[in-house]
Length: 350
Image (cartoon, rainbow, N blue to C red; front, side, top):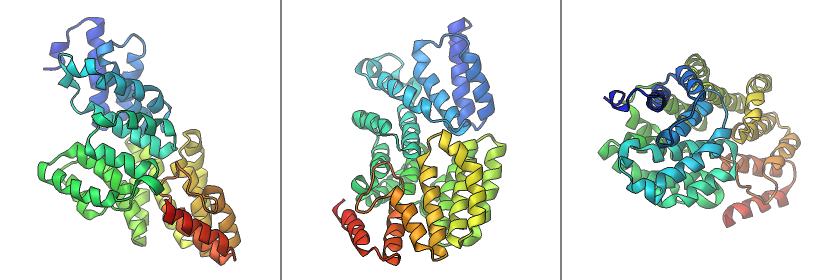
């Protein structure tokens, strides 16, 4: 029905292709969505679907190309267009449904993965237009030492409401917020039992793999590799990279430095080009964790102080609490009690 209503002229064709690209991306057909976007770039995109086009480009760039540049180039303007007073009052303003929410989610991902402050600033400017779930995500990821206090309590409250109303889009956001504070447990993941698309199940699997590491379930290590292979086959190259990154956590915990070097060789070049501090910072942390496992406390300390200097909890460092604890251990074990105390004091003051 939507396609039939769009007409047959060049602009109408571009509108149809734009909607098709979005639906293909959301449906897991990333390569086809990328093909449609290449076709769209050959001509002008009508202004009324420009925000939708921006969302499709970002979706494919993030998931398929492991590229976050377009997130910061396109989403700020698209969010401004959708949340301006004129746009909110325009006829057909509801046609885009939850697009503001979905754009905010993509900007949250890009900001958390890269540490780029531009995304957090944009989300802060549009705060009044964002749902409680988006605002919680923002708080949990933007600057965790200083903004994530109480996030898990708020998460549990929102979970009850989302479960009661079957709000799938909000559940996605809560899963991402929970991942920031080590709370993506089975109860939350059950909200997705009826969702079978790979876009959903891949996100659930990422949360499950990381929680398994945190809970010391070493038997789950191989699941990370199986999920990476599945993601690669489906064209979700960013997911594949992240699953291998999560597998590296298990290797580091076991002190498997050879395996860790192999994973680094495979994923660090791509993560580096994409400026994914979420991966590159934590690969350094995992090297330090493996060094601790072998009793090389000095090596661990020198690696960790590059990530989180004594007494400083830098902004842009996702999962800061993991290198925080490792740094304190490495400092104490290498005879640097003052540095450990400075770090603990910074944590208390944050």
